[in-house]
Structure formats: C-alpha cells, structure tokens
Length: 335
Image 1: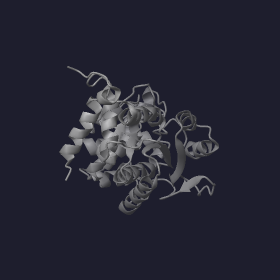
Image 2: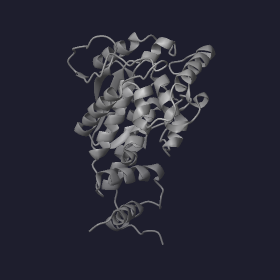
Image 3: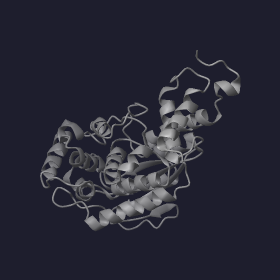
C-alpha cells in the first residue's frame, strides 16, 4: 500500500530530477506539488480553469460604508453577462470559462438566460443591528455553493464576487474569525476618502461589539454576505472534488478563511493568487499561512487576480508532466 509519505517522496523525486538545478523553478515547483497532491497523482491534469462570480447585496450598505450605491451590484451583473467587465476581459485573455451566480441580489430575480439563480434572499440585513442572515440561510448558502464547486468540470476553479459593501462584510467576518483588529482589517474598498474610512471603521466597531466569540459558521451568519457564504461552500465542494482552488483577493480570502475553519481539509487545495491593495488582505493571508504568487496593486475583486495566476498553474502542470528528467534527456545530473 502506498502511503502519503511514499507519494510525497515520489513526487519530490520527480520534481527534483527534472533537467534543472535543484529548486530552480521556485514557486512553480510548489504549485506542481499542490496540484499533484490534490489530485492524488504524479501526473495531474491542469487543462481547464473556470471562474464563478457570486453576486449578492448587503444590508450594511445602508449605513454608508461604500462609495457606490447598492444598485451597482445589479448593474455589474448585467455587465458580466454582456461580457464587458474586467473579469470577462481577463477570462478571455487566459482562456478560462466564466459563469455568474445570483446568490442574493436586492430586488426581483433577473430571469435572464446565462445567469445561474441560487438566490438565498434579496440581500442580507444590516449586521450593525442584527445577524446578516439566519443560521438556516447560511447553511443553505454553504450547501448551494458546495454543490456548485463539486459540479465544476474544471481542474482549477477561481471564485470572484460582486456586492456593494462586501469589503465591510469581509472585514467584520475576518475580525471575528481571527481576532485581528478592525483598525488593520478595514480598508477603503471602492475608494473611500479619509472621512469615509473613519465612518466605515466606526460602523464596524459598533457592529462587532454586538456579538462575543463565534464559531466560523456563526460568524458567517452574523457578518457574512450570501455571496461570501456561497463562495466558502464552493471552495469546500471543490476541494472535496479534488480541484485546485485559486483564491482571489480580500473578500475571496475571507471566504477561504471561513471555508478552512469549517472544513480544515479545504486549505490544502488552495493556492493564493495575489496580495491586493485592500488594507486587511495581508492579515487574512497570514491567518491562513498563505504566500500569494503575485503583487500587482489590484483591488477590483471579481476573481481578476485569480485569473492572472491561472497561467502559472498551467505552466506548473506542463513542467511536471512534460519536462524531461536527466535520465530521459541523457543529461548528466548534479554530482
């Protein structure tokens, strides 16, 4: 019987005896290790990537914590469906498939072809005064996401989000999951000025004081968004289905943190695409023990950073599967 230790040793040997100096491909070798371990094979497939954008609205937007009005969530969903957003452009550039999920946008259902309807409600409640969602709705969002993550045909999955005020939700959730102060986690989001940032931090301090210690699923229900909870569920389902999860920026990382706390085995399937310019992202990455691949000054969300990391995973797969070993190539190895 092959043990995990045997597999790890065989994988490291395969990587080390490619025609290159030991360790000379750096993080690409790390990516190859993750994808082989997730799929449980020394010859993993890394042929396709799929981006899923989860969209939902947040009751906390009513407290003036975002520079943009809530109707932008709905407008941006139409932009995704028309192919006009940054995520669409990047998906085309790297050859990734893309789909959009209504996890709980304010107003009536769209009823549009091409939009996946998984609505939990017409936006969350304001978590300044009460839980963002019920425990039952949180469980339902997690389960709907888990099914979507498991059903994807792709070898690698990326998740993006759209929801006005969701940096506020991610900051509050991250605070409850890690204990890191809101002075560190609360950032400018869509571009708040200094007064707006101060107001946002004050609102979240008051909201955080409403509850004491919480478990990860309780924290999601109290402070999360429907799209964040559904994304966390999708990560759990994708990991269970042996897919590599490419984690995007601040909001996606808050979902990743929740997923890893709810089902710890999910963490091993994650690679972290980039460190965003949103103030609190570094603290959430640290809580996950994560070292991102890129730092490009991004702060858009939508899964854009995750898409830019996809070619690196594809390259790692090619290295592991098609790069010759010293013996294959008749090249003298290290002495």
